[in-house]
Length: 469
Image 1 (cartoon, rainbow, N blue to C red):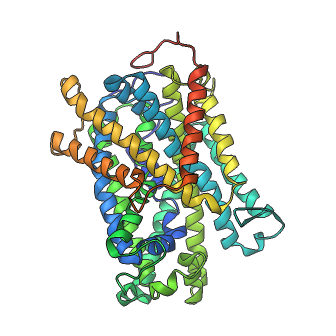
Image 2: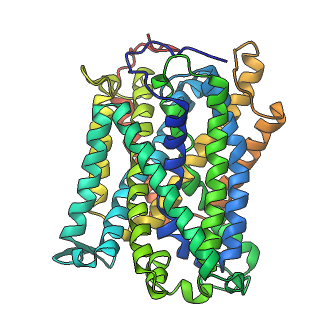
């Protein structure tokens, strides 16, 4: 079923393949390389990590379907602002969108940190000229410059327009898939399933198999975050796009990512006994070298670098569209709704997020886990609110054209809501083994204060419309 996006001045160039690469590339990134050892440590072994990621993917599939239904019905940039505003009002819409902006936006500096870290592993000679330390982690000038270069490249591409960013995304996703395929093939020839044993071994963070699964499970939303970047670029869909297939693309991207993660953990977990695997600094890469596969380790590192750029690019694009939509609703200063006169891209949003992304290069690896958990909280909260909005709109706007609908109807939407509330409980209830740490709550508090400052700057007389004209 074809649909036409509203004429809002943004260029319409994106195809279904572009949308898949935007979502899949955003989801996968480089967590499977940089953090697979941490997942095993948190869970007490690769089996717990595999179970956690399988459950995490299953939990988020209904949420992906919710986004597919709402976006195919209301294809506007930053649609989450519109969905919640139409169902629960201005304030709820602001809080939801600002949290999603946190969940998405925080991944950009996260990836800047990751690319600096990975560059040092790819070329150890870059770990020279130490500048300072952050929480015991040394920041080196060459790796800092690599991170800054990647951040500025993504900033520039998104400034120039969606077509350029989408073209790069397509190639980065292909390279990323090739890297994972190579890792699976190597594991089949070199690895052994016996290396996955023991099924569980107590660590500092996991006292039993189930607590280990839960400890990893609450991290999975961060590593599955990215499917919601597809709806944020809905206004840039090519004319004549099939919106029923658009909704399916979101679910396909999520399902593909779940399969990817499970294969990645299994493959790396079989290379050597996992209890030895987790002793390496970046085990997925270092183990390849210890097995005499140095050239494959370098190829994986290159694929990981491509994955970082693709993820940063997707979340940069999505975050600026969320801020654009918030400004159109009078939730952020009107400047955030301004488009570049030639490239038709969000001018203020690109600048704001560009500065935030560049700042990540100066922070270092020490904040990777706190940023991961904060992003998970913000992302799941926003997705749960969107799921509730989708359910309510089934009653308040039953005649709204919906080219794609959530499978199993309202029961499917309820599954998304229950799953979201369960994960939020694990993150927010003090007795939970995954309760956020003080530094993580501090990051959330700072972001909320920043949002209130922005909101206070907005004129109360700013006009608000349902769909921008």
